[in-house]
Length: 189
Picture 1 (cartoon, rainbow, N blue to C red):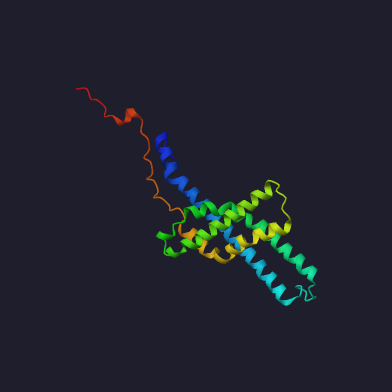
Picture 2: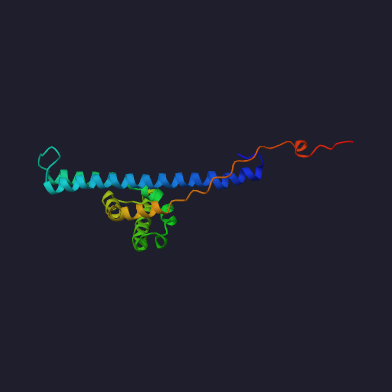
């Protein structure tokens, strides 16, 4: 860091804050990608189980077991989806599809933002203790999750292209010379 307060502050603004913003953006994007991948994998497993009518060990699946497995899948998906609810709004605000290689993504981003708003409303209802039956919570949560499973890749490409850019590195500060050394010595004749 430069030894002067103004230069040090400028170094923080020009170098360290942009690096921090990039790291936070990358971490939020990676967290959402991981959550969507995990939910998608569990959804595929659940769909396979429903289609086959059997547990993973090939035993027949009763209607009660199917209902319990569905409830477990939806509850687990909701808990994981809260990561998207936490991180997506900031990333969506940063996205500029019109200036990206995919300008037609704007409508999809709007749908994803609406799905997050719906999930935030549901979360507010749950947190505030509104009497919400588990079936109602699942029924309200699933459309938002499904929207993100369907269009999450479009969001991820927009989030990646909208990452903050690095600013050029600051020049290395010159060593500070004492004031007396900076003035030429007066010669007496």
